Amino acid sequence: MASPRGRILDLVKAQCRIFSSTFNPQRLRLGNKVLRQRLRGPALASWYPRNTVSFRDLQDIYKPLDLETFDEGQDDREEAIQIAKLRGKGRPKKKRTAAESRSHKKKK
Image (cartoon, rainbow, N blue to C red; front, side, top):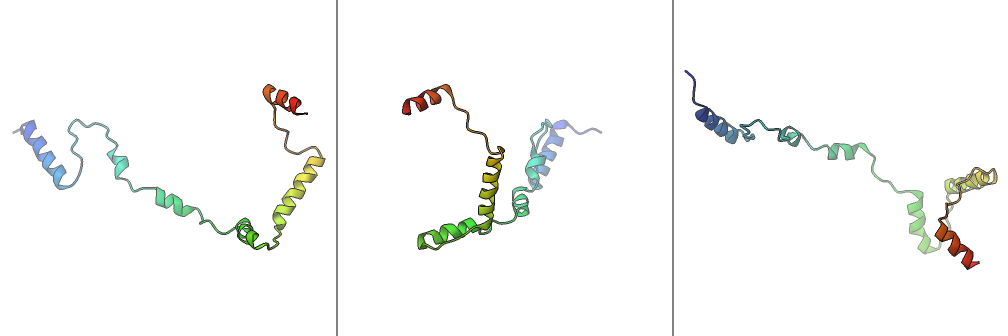
């Protein structure tokens, strides 16, 4: 003996209310599967290491105290850039627009 559709829907509705699930008799794609998943943000954030103090931060702290600091890595980097410029391998000059070149000529 078949049960009427209305009674089955009432039963499913009560079941959804008891078990805290979504009542969706038309079987629409609501995205509940995605919304039920755990959030990925904390797991992704814990993957990357925490920010640590850099040498640049220490320089900024000691600058008001007039203490001399020397960053060997930065000095090596600047020296390598100068050597590359002398060899013609440096950064290209910024392209000028027509308006900028006209204003530049007027300043001279």
